[in-house]
Length: 150
Image (cartoon, rainbow, N blue to C red):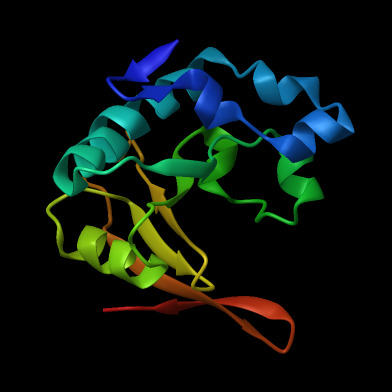
């Protein structure tokens, strides 16, 4: 199923961990989750791809509850509702991608530069106005901290 010109439902559900652990529910999202993934692709990922003129690799999209728990994700993660994706773009460092999105006019809800490894971007279709909240995820004493980035 196409969610936008260049993004499919299959790539937004892909998970080696869920496959390995037999979490079949990962691959059978509800209608509201699919609607959120479509909004994420149409409002963020597709415009970003067109702006960058580069393919975007989604390393984590929707996560069912068991998968999110298994990988240590936040219980409040927007991945659980299909409102977030972790992405990388070949030819751009994590910081370059983060800065390009941050400086763009794309209306994201959250943008997180995570550990200099990937960028988390989210879109909340139920908000009248997405927050454009920018954060940096870092490890301090073995715990993840999210630092505001203005």
